[in-house]
Image 1 (spheres, helix red, strand yellow):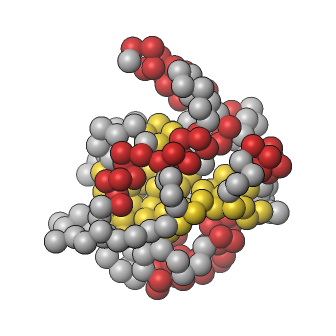
Image 2: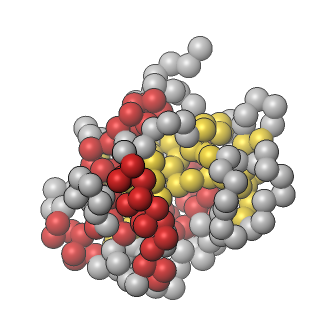
Length: 226
């Protein structure tokens, strides 16, 4: 039986420049109906936890808008990937790690909070970009390895930008790898072999990633239907 574990810290990776969105600061993207930003949704979903935002591009804009949060600045945001951002913020404290380009719900975090596992949030969606990170699983739904590029098997779910890690040994090794390979994505570098790392599937909770204008257009259209 899983026993609820307390993870009181959240690291938001938001240093990069969104080239596909004409340089829009992703954290400041607003939901077409509620008018709330992605950062607003993250703050609500993780209410009561310490939120650390790794900033780079348009850092001052974010900090001015949310002065009560904690920040880490990635001075090399233009030359590195989100692995460097995570390495700058990561320590041995149990933490959530979340990409700064997703609208997220509190219902999802409540479900993940109720589990004691170290985990990666995944989806078995069919349409995936070539930059997607996929997870190879064993028969117990534990992640054996992750890889980027064309999916080898549709049974390999996609890592979709949210991690929960409590193991100090995993956190230390993850940081070491991120420092060593700062041009990669954090999902490529998570050390699956260090401890049991579960794949947890997204269900019907609200979760929406914005990477392109097409993503936002789809959100607008779905919001009208609702």
